[in-house]
Image 1: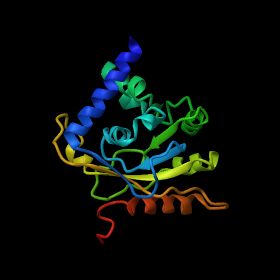
Image 2 (image 1 turned 90 degrees about the vertical axis):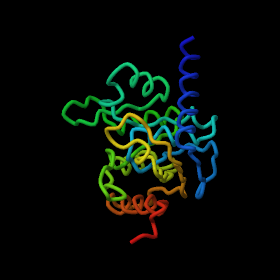
Image 3 (image 1 turned 180 degrees about the horizontal axis):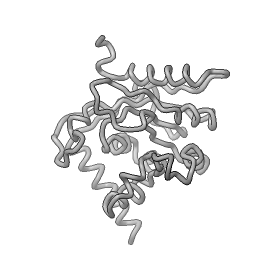
Length: 212
C-alpha cells in the first residue's frame, strides 16, 4: 500500500511538472541509456531535480537519485515524503558544524549500490545575475573517488522564472533540460582545472552561451 502511494505521488509530480512547464529533454551530447551517470546541473530552484527526473525515461528515473540539502527536504512531513520517499534523495547536511556523515561517502555509497546521481555543484541556488556560481569541490572529489562513472552536464533553462525563490505558486512557462557530452577526470588533472572544465561544459549548454 505504501509503495503504491509513493509510486502514485511520483506519477502525479511528473504530470504536474509537465503540465506547468511543458518540459522538453534534449539529449545533445549523450543518449538516454542505462549507463550509470552523475548528472551535474545548474541550480536556481528547488524544482531543478524534479525537471531532470521528469525528462528521464521511466526505467532510468527510478535508478537516479537527486542529492539535496537535508535542511530543506526534512523540514515538514510533505517535503520529507517527497524528498526521502518519492525521490529517494541522498540527503546531505550542508552545515559542516552539524554534519555527522561525509557527503562524498554518502554519494559514493549510492553509486556503489547501483544508482545514478543528480548533483548541483554550485552548492546552493543561484539567485544572482551570473549564469553560474563557482563550483564547490564536491564534484571533483566524487569524480576522483569513482573515475569510471560518466559525468554528464545538464542545463536547466527557465525554471527560475517558473518558481522564483520565495514564491509558492508556479508560473506556467516552457522549460528545457539539455544533456551535454559526458566528461571524466583526466590523469593528473588538478581540482582547479577539472572544475573549470566542468563549469565550461555546463555553460556551453546555456542558450546564452554565445552572449558575451
